[in-house]
Length: 407
Image (cartoon, rainbow, N blue to C red; front, side, top):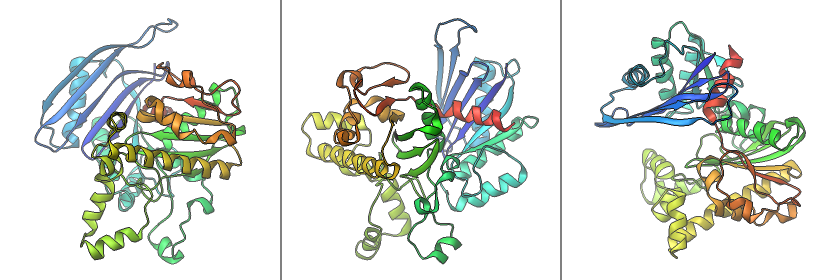
C-alpha cells in the first residue's frame, strides 16, 4: 500500500492526515492547536477501515485529546509523531511514500504540485511578503517535516495554483501598472485545492466530462469564496490579492470601498495594523452581529434579532451578486455546487442564495435540500436545467492525490 502524510501547518496550528492512497481513505488524522500559547490542544483520531472489497464504511475508532503547551512547530511535529507511535497507526508499519504540504501562496510562480527543493523553499520564503500570516507557518511545517522524514520526497500543493488559469482581464486590477508590477499586485485567488476537488467530483457525479461544463462553486466556511469553472479551468474567483476580498465571511469584510480605509486613517486615526485587524478579525458576520458562526446567526435570525437578520441578509445579498456576475461571465451555468461547513450544512443559506436564479434555469427542491445525508447529493428538482449539488470537500485527499502525481 502507498501512504501519503498530508501536513497543513497554520500560524498557530498543525493539521495532519495519514491517507491510504490504495483505497483513498484516512487512517488517522489530528489537529494541534494554539501553538506558542500557554496551553495548547493536542488531538488525534484513529479510524478503523473496512478491508478491501468490503462494503462497510470507515468507522470512527478512537479519539485522543489533551491540553498541554506546544512551544513551536518543531515541538508540534514531534507531538504528532508521538501520537502516531502511542495510539497508531504505526508509521513504521505504514510508512509514507511522500509528504504533501498545503502552501497558501504560490504567487504567479507555482501552478502545479511541486517537489520541494532548496530553491522551492527560497521561493516560498520570498512569497511571504504576499502572505505574511500563512507562508511563514507553511514553511515552518515543511522544515519540521523534512527534519523528521529526510529520505521521503516532500511536495508543496498551493492554494493559488488552480487559479493560475485566470486570464489577464480577470486577474488584473485597474491600478497604476508600474506600481502593480513592482509589488506583484494582482488577483491570485485561494481555496484552489477545494475548488479543484469539488469541480472534478461534481462533473463525475452528473456524468459529464469536466472539460465540457460550466460550474459555479461556493466554498462557504468561516472563510468563503466562489469560483467560476469553465471546462475544468478557473476563470473567475472572488478572493483576490489576499483572502480578504469577495464574499462576507466569519470575521472578514469581503468587498469594501478602499476609500473607507483612507477615511478611517484620517478621521479615526487607525494605523495599518489596526486596519488589518479590523478587516480580517473584527468584521464580517462577527462585526455585524457579534457572532462569526453561521449557526448562531441563523438562531438569532429565527429569534427575531435585528443584527443577526441584517448580517444574514448582507451575506445572502453578496452571494447572489457574485452568482449573477459569474453566470454572466460564463454565459450560463450547468452545475452549481456548495461545499465546506456552511455550504454543506446550512439549508437556508443554499435556498436563499439561489432563490433569484430561476432566470438561469435553477430550481431547488426543498425536500432534497433539507435532507441530512452524507456524501455528494443533488438538491435541484428533476426539471431544473441546472444541477445543484452539495459536495463535501476533502482538501487533504486532494493534496495527497496531487502529491502522488508529483512524485
